[in-house]
Image: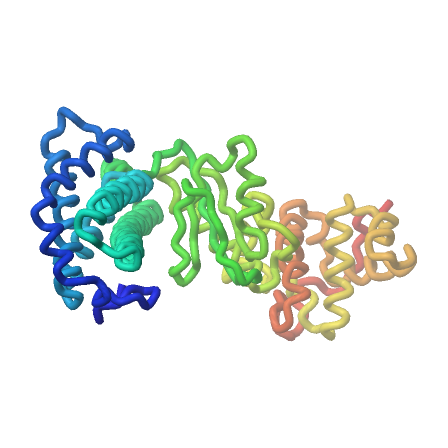
Length: 424
């Protein structure tokens, strides 16, 4: 309702006779009694015979509404702020108690019905014209709407404040769980209770990358989320429970998301560390970002390989030194052939099938490798080292500018003697 004395429909309060207020005032206590009785009879939530404070609050609200209405009839410019502020406070109180506004809105309709009934009963005695009576009814209904709007506004403000505080607590809880070293278990339990988050036995952390969908992801209520971090992160409780994996996949659809390993609650920091490492390798192209959510446990060998890239580069520098003097294209062909040979049980025919080349081509390359690596290819430990560095090299092969290969230099080690490592 506007403060200039007009209702939202344009019918002004000034159209009501000022003397009508004088006729109403002597009956306000009686009307208030009727309203309270009718409200308590028809709205169960307001019928609290043993609660004197609640009955007092109800009476206070009814009396404020009646007196303001009459004051507004007497003076259309009467300030509505005190009564609307009062109903905003009522709305905030209902939200704080965890109730909806349904009961209050029903009570307002019942009260308005009682007021209208008393008005129509006295209209003939006061010689109120039908037009004036209609104006009173319209103003009365719009006045109810104004109060209902104020209550709804207060309710929404309180809900937003509670939600904001709860979100802050949950973000703080996420900080504690990701702390390294971990926070005290008692501190986590206390904050979890304040955040209304049931403490699970196990969790999995999630690291988020680019979000391809324009919609904000909708997470289940028991998922802790902080999308404001440099790497947006989540904690999923009991991730291995029935149906949880599908639930997570649906919630993260359209998002580059990596789920860390399932760990006990107090080891959540370890889960997010592995999720972030996996995400980094995905963003570099080392791990292929296929459709759906990526899970760290499916790429553990790759994560181990890239846990210390300086170390793997040093090992490659040492073990792949025989290839250093070759052209890059030769290095690539021989490295690919050597890895396939190591992975296929050193079977030349299977290497040919893996690489889609003629077996004779494979045998030619293997003779070159014999000449370059010599006795190293007969040593199981050295073959293991070679497979490690060649796997890492292959994972980086599609990443422009990233290669694991020693710098060009003179070949070291063997004199060129050809060795016969077993081929079948």
